[in-house]
Length: 142
Image 1 (cartoon, one colour):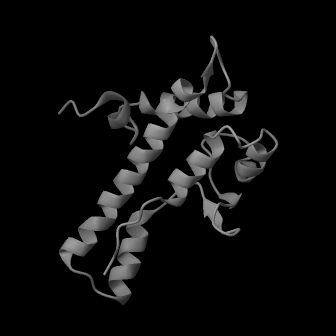
Image 2: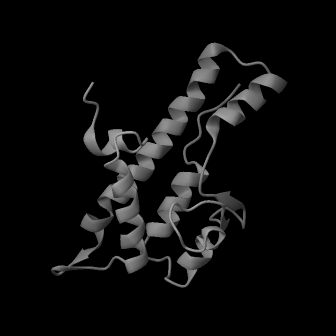
């Protein structure tokens, strides 16, 4: 049976990148596969879980197909995967949306310029109607 997962590599990567304790010397290492350019892709580097490597992007449908091909799943079990992927994206969005409020300090911000650039990139994507993030920024207008 496919189980819902709490955090995806993507949400862990975003959380790790934007958190205050991640240093500005660590952030370029996390984005070295794209030479610090957006959109980030590739390997994040050793993660929170005993040095396990993480990827910036996730591809949940490929995992669903592979899992179902080797171990056929019920329709209700297969439904859990896209719901879990959507929740992970939503959780990452919430982390990014709340970063300024959490890190505002006496009229200024404790947010790194690298994090500010990352958040600006994501928010720019969210203003593009054809992008997946659009619904998180603008809601469901349909």
